[in-house]
Figure 1 (cartoon, chains in turn purple, yellow, blue, green):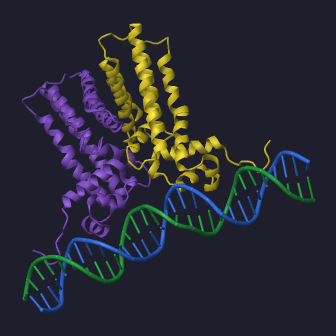
Figure 2 (figure 1 turned 180 degrees about the horizontal axis):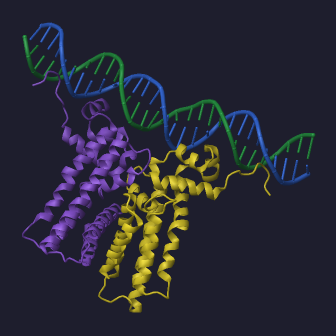
Figure 3 (figure 1 turned 180 degrees about the vertical axis):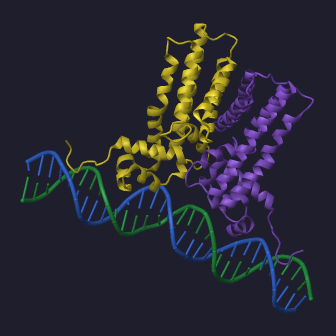
Length: 197
Length: 197
DNA sequence: GCAATAATATACCGTTCGGTATAAAATGGT
DNA sequence: ACCATTTTATACCGAACGGTATATTATTGC
């Protein structure tokens, strides 16, 4: 046990709160006052625990990936379901995350990608976002490639084209969620998108 | 001819420059220094010509609609083309706009919708964005409804669902363009998206 | 109990923010 | 020529920005 006064706040809880502020308002739109108020701490505590605004943002991105994004990938691995059902489950899981009542609307990564093309966006944060972009694409590419190898997906399909298309569908539903569309409306978008297969 | 010193800058040119800054950096991310530098004028000139930052933003949105968005709709009215070809032309026109080399990537309205859900986003600007959202949806809804009346689109299609779907496709390609995808890659996304018809 | 240590709270730092007062420069009307 | 008018350029305003020094409070090891 280290000497000195103990933390009176939960670091994970504070990070979750900060993430939601960034998720809703973006990096530039989220002030330290916004962040520390939501986290329930004051600035020196934030700086001691997370470094600075940029590092808090990067930690928020990582927290989003762990707590809000990774779980969807499990849907693609349900061996008891058909190829189509697994993909549908994946997309449905995602749109529920994008339309949840307790969290901000849309996709934090999608919002961050969009903001990160600004030339004065912090470099380390941009690098983190670029890495996450590749991961997301890799998941879908592997899924379609494996399905084609297994014979679940016909050989005349272009797995790269399908990957780009469904990446687009996910960014699209994220934008629609942000525009106020309901889970039900996004469900019909997902169902329609699956008709290409 | 009014008395007094003449303007030494072109108002439309300055507005175009301001629009591109907002388009790339968003409302919160664009400072008055960014804006006036790009416009080639100083702050009092900007305030005299446009009012304030929020009104400049609203004027930028209107300028985007006029100069970058409205023209695409003409593709839907090419009576010499099939229903499918008109829709394809519309989407292709849009993705070229989203990937143009001379303008910022993506869609200014899509970016603005995303940013406008922040609770400290200016109210008048949010109202303008909400109005533009409805216009965009109306264009597609009218297109599909008319096509169904003409018999070009089978009756078993849900025009509302198709509208939501292609709104999602457009937001999706806009996000992919912002993520760095090429016109060629977005073309395959558009071609894939048309398979649902 | 008493130093050493670490987290809290407050007040403050220089800079940048959106916005403006002020004065110089340029035009038209007379 | 001169005055009214409008735009320009500079300097400045209070507020908010990201970030930190300082002092107080709480905790552990001894």
